[in-house]
Image (cartoon, rainbow over all chains, first blue to last red; front, side, top):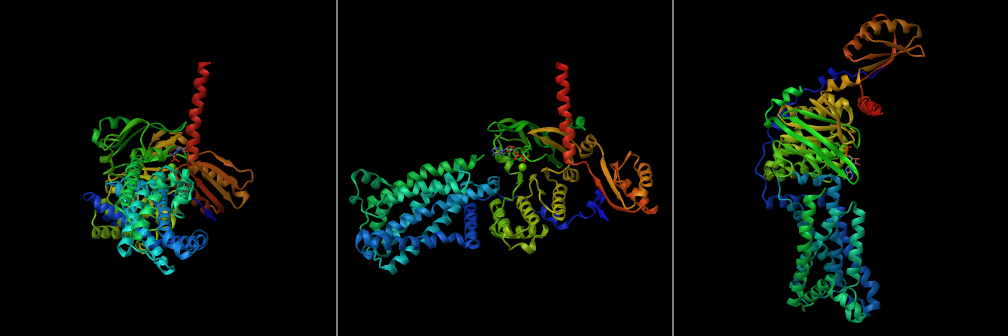
Length: 284
Length: 332
Ligand SMILES: Nc1ncnc2c1ncn2[C@@H]1O[C@H](COP(=O)(O)OP(=O)(O)O)[C@@H](O)[C@H]1O
Ligand SMILES: [Mg+2]
């Protein structure tokens, strides 16, 4: 005999009051809201935990650099420079810039995922300085970018890369890459808040980054190009960064190059960081 | 009921909303919703998919700007004073809003730290909540490996790291098995006992019935009926008892018993082993079945259908359709 009868009384019966539950609810007193620093650190530790639990996401900062460097060195080395070792001296700084620029878009993808999954809604109802959610994540991304840089340089050294700028020159060049990438990330967070899906975000970043990285001085000296193209290549932010990174790695960097990188970074941050925050606060 | 409300002070209200509207493109997702929810009570928003429940809740939780109308939450204006509102409310969305890649304890600690607890306090609070919610065994498991019921509970736990004065729960039990659903109900009841006002949405009359003091039925962005659960059910009529007998020759005796006990008209099924009767008191149904047993009438199957949301809906929307027809005839 099957029974579908469930009375109100029988439901009440298994709902005994749980003391622990009441106790836990009673002890949920509201503390003072966190300051900007603590909330930023809380978000940074979330990003670190995510790396711990989803180590696959380090794929882009470990495998990409290796593949890119090997592929371009051996594919183009012979044809463009006649010798792979010679070409590596020229290519590595540029490939480093290109690789790190590519992986900045994951910042936007992570944010986009947070929004679609609703975590973002929860953060928005918390009593926090809202930008800390993004800054915390970006700080951890800077660690990821450093990893990518170090891996690529280590591999380069094995392949015959000999930076004349020494440790300090290379270190300073990496700092420039990090500043630039932090600033570039704001573009992807802006798009991450606008587009509906991860796919469209990848598409946009591809459309932006492809021309910027290939029509630059990453692979070839601009003076080998037609004049009309030289203008674009020389004013391309990727070229500006690649020139400076190359300069400092090989000991020929100038303060004008540093100023160029800082200026480009400042412009990107000044436009896209406030735009991101505006969209973040007013997301429908 | 309605009259009493007039004597309440304005500070007795958790939510007072008038004429809330939200338009998406051409669609009026929320189309003039008025709400008055008393502090310390549970209000149930009942409606099918797409009725506008989530949109209304998101507006009241300051996550979505309103297109028209106004609302006060604990006396704070929704638009001009949203920061003050955010300090007193919490929202558990329709879909789990936690980081699925993190473990249960990491999620709760993150929220606790963002609420302003120190790292050490955050850990203590997280453990306390995990134990209270029966999740301590899964504290160090990634949330993506949680069952549906566990996920819902960790999500609610994250919403009450700091006990809110007003908790929004968007379809807290949709898709849960009965046991998990009861666990969630217990949590809600405990919160209400502790003084939290709850606004929950649901697609099930049963759930609103169990939890809500006041129910608003929402349809196409409008509240089409409001009242207590019994008021709503009364508007729908009574439940239905279906009985399937083993032996056809018992049918008439069974009918007599049901007519006596339930005091209702009984329909005989064409297969001569089934009977259907109106019934709204489960105790009387139990008595009837006991009487069957005493008289050796064997029952192979029976079910007591409560008025479903469908029936409430049919009745409510059906009525309004009739009314529209009526007024149309008057004009003619
Ligand atoms: N962001 C949005 N953009 C466009 N339409 C939306 C959006 N959110 C909800 N809607 C529409 O508004 C209506 C009400 O949706 P919702 O409030 O989610 O209903 P419920 O929660 O009751 O299922 C639906 O028809 C839905 O398609
Ligand atoms: Mg909904």
